[in-house]
Length: 147
Image 1: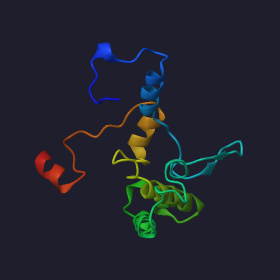
Image 2: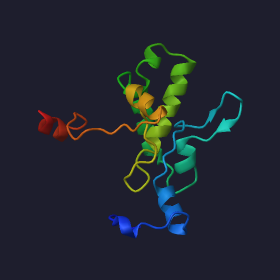
Image 3: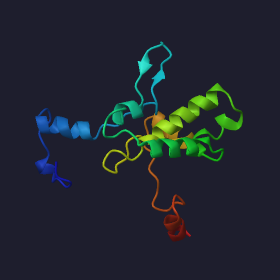
Image 4: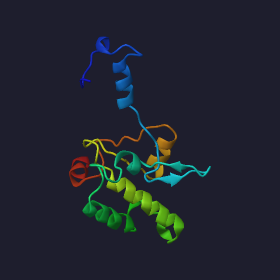
C-alpha cells in the first residue's frame, strides 16, 4: 500500500486490498503480559502476541535484564502508585512493565507493545488515542526546543 493515496485511488470496500488496509490500521488494547481474565480464561498479552518466546522478535537476555532493572526502579512511572508498598499487586504490575519493555520496539520502529499509565491508559481504554504533542519533555532535545 503506498504511503500517499489519492481518494480516487482507494480500494473498493470489500476488496482484498481494502481488507489489508483495514488490518494494517487495527489497534488492539490488551494487557502487556499474558493474564487470566475474570472468567478464568487465559488472555494473551502483547508480548506473547507480538514478541513470543522462540521468535525472532523475542527480547535478548540483555534486554530482559535491562527491563527488569528499569521496572524495579521506584521512579518508573508504570508502577509508581501500586508499588508504594511491596506485594502481589506490585509484582504483577512489574511483570506487565517488563513485558511491555521487552517488546516495545520490535515492529519496524513503529512500536510493538506501547504501555500507557495513568491518564494515557484511561484515555485509550475508553476508546481515545493518546498522541504526544511535538512540544514535550520526553527527551533532552524535545525539552530544549520546548523551552
